[in-house]
Image (tube, rainbow, N blue to C red; front, side, top):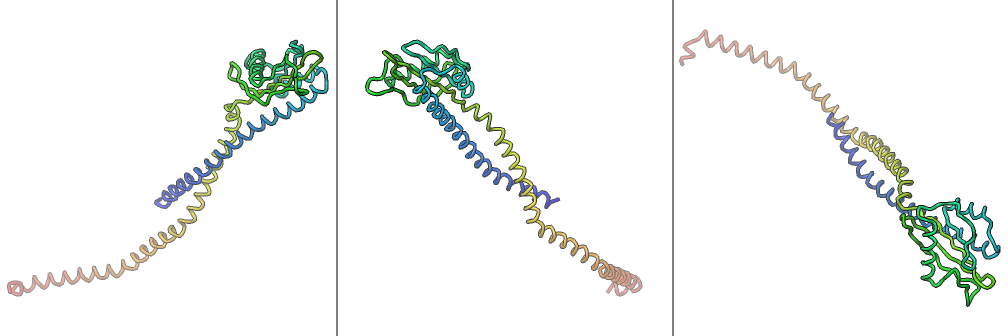
Length: 253
């Protein structure tokens, strides 16, 4: 029982120490994976922008089915207008914030870079913003870019907004997997620790067993001589007592 208790304590100590290292490693991997997913979302937006802006430069108009597929597949907003007149496309994906308000926010953000959808480029064949981010009234965030091209006597523009997956959503998506990995790892560490500590304590267990066997054997071997000694001592005491009773004068002297 004593060795079992020692084994449990050692196994718990090993599990706690190795579990702390495992938790730290999984935390680093979790944070890194979230960052990779965020960068992947940004890269996906850049790829989509290159595709749709290239088609916008080549094709005078983009058909509704392509825009609908693009919006639905990428949780995006594609807004096209020419000479201030929006391209008639109601949108195939409804964001959390109002679509019109997001477009106004994006246009205001583009205006800070000096890019206006109704003003054609002067010194170059096109005018466009860099990648920017906006946040809607519902707290939803988006990557965005605006491209303006000359069109006859005016300008035509393309605005692309792509929804950014919130950090809380990414955490909820990934957390169960890492929690399961942590629990499974801790369980494996516990069984391995029990096995290792059991093997480490085996010599002590065997020594304790041998000691107990030696004590038992020594007790058995000493039992007979001690019985003889006790019997002899008892006999001698009885003889001395009888001799004392038979010679009272010797007791007086």
